[in-house]
Image (cartoon, rainbow over all chains, first blue to last red; front, side):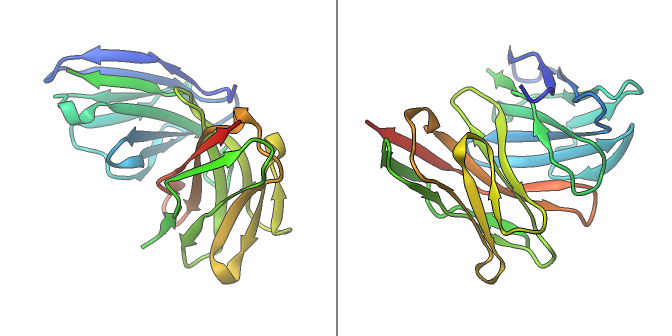
Length: 113
Length: 114
């Protein structure tokens, strides 16, 4: 158990809908990351937040957004969903923004039908 | 561009045999390197990491990896594989120019035959 908690574990939704994935980082970690794992793209970095502020951005679609709240939990919002958004979405956390170890949650499986 | 290459998509080894999974990276600065393992339907578990110092690093579950700067490699090894090691293994390099960003290889699927 990495200490990173993600909900829901599985989600099935229709095209055009919007979903929210939730993540609680390890106790004491200030950085939260979101990654997408798909068969065609592999593991891709989406975004990093540090202590409530966006810190780094990867290939995150404009239809996707994230935020980190004062209690350090984070949410990833996916809107106008398309079939191609079906993937495993990982949240990860680390202590800060230095050369830290990054610990991953078990992921949220999103299926868009 | 920074990248990680895992040349082997699949590897099959017999239980009890030794294992080496290859990883090559392309990165101009000092690399921070990781190996993660993903069992079917599971999340990513950290096996080991290299930040600096001794180039041979020990990890969990009996795994070790050796950093070779001259070869831009960070290969993962295990002297004797167990059936429970069957999983997908990912090598990653941490980019730190702008925040923290892990760049992953495509992964190597390990099959263990009895």
